[in-house]
Amino acid sequence: MVAVLCASVMLSTVVQAQDSRTTSAHTGDYLSLVMYGALAQVDDITTSTGTLIVNNDSDGTGGLGMALGYNWAKKGVPIRSEFEYSYRFRFDYDIRIANQAGYENNLSSHVFFANAYYDFAIADRWTAYLGGGLGIALNQSDVERTALAGGTKTKRDDTNMNFAWNLAFGLVWQVGNDWDFEFRYRYAELGEVESGPHSDGTTVTADSYNSHDFLFGIVYRF
Image 1 (cartoon, rainbow, N blue to C red):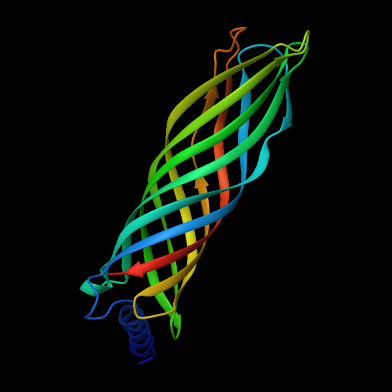
Image 2 (cartoon, rainbow, N blue to C red):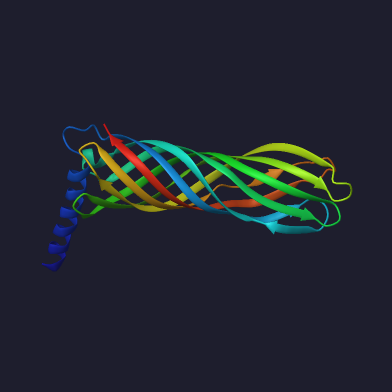
């Protein structure tokens, strides 16, 4: 009897999530515009020459993006699937190779994710969700190298394509018949960052670029 009651409550919760997010007037399709701030870091930095000194490997950054998705609650399943693109702004990290040169890396990224989320209602007009996604990240390194002897500066741009993934949870607030506000936390792994070879033959590599993202989105439901 208890099991039946629990199952009924869970089913009711799912139905509420479906009813509050998808009505007969909507197709299930939606468009989301997002902005976010992030605390990011690069890990496991190595160089092909010399003794590495890491001056800074973490930075605050942000980004803008958009996602086109479908709410499968229209078909009776409380799941959303979407394709997301975002551009991550400048992320700075600085290293030095002892007795050789300093390297200032300005990093930006184009990121593409295929995401899926499971929705469940928690209150009137509020829906929580869990999920994640897989995709690719194009990490663009704009590096200025300064020789410690003489101060000569050289620049180099490199782009690396990497496998990327994310895990996320968040809240959706239904503010109108067609509009939602979304609040999300996401942990994202964006793969490797590499620059070089520079003028002296040195290559700088960070094995992992990861980020804690805090997102706000405006969602229009068609």
